[in-house]
Length: 243
Image (cartoon, rainbow, N blue to C red; front, side, top):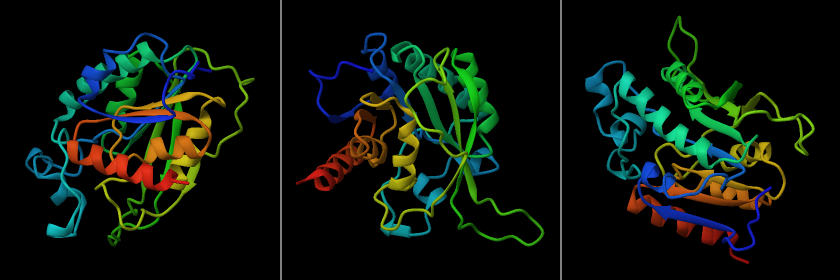
């Protein structure tokens, strides 16, 4: 458990994740829980190069703002993940859990990067989001995944409950981010962290992980590269936590 007496209960910091990660000393966080850009959403590079608003929303001009970093090819994505995951492991405490959201296309690349960065890959949990476009003769693509592991040994004696391997929640309504995750899903996920711990989300987006962490009794830090989404996340969290 971290000594968080001198740190704010929560914060969202505007900046590039890799640069910010390098500014923290070793052993700063009790868990890394995040939802990075998948660099997916298309079978070809031309499809990947489209705006994220085009790839992940059918709302047209009413869609939330696009975000950067989602057009990498397979090798670039794997290398980039290995780099930030390595920095995350450096600033994570021994035994700290890691949870990273991903889709089916990039799951193999992500699990390679997790192991390259020195984490112990312990398994894959499932987010069953239910709603998906049906295609005759095919399985529904109604799941995303949480690749999880730990920074070295993670004793089963930790004061943490047994968590399910499948979480069933629909996509949130009235999203303020294109790939926003359900708040209750994140409240479930953050419980992998020991009580009183500080959680890091290097790709904070709409601030859902940070908000969920605080609501579950943890403290949290989020990084967000987009100035627009940083402002949205801070406004949302302040509103939700207001007395």
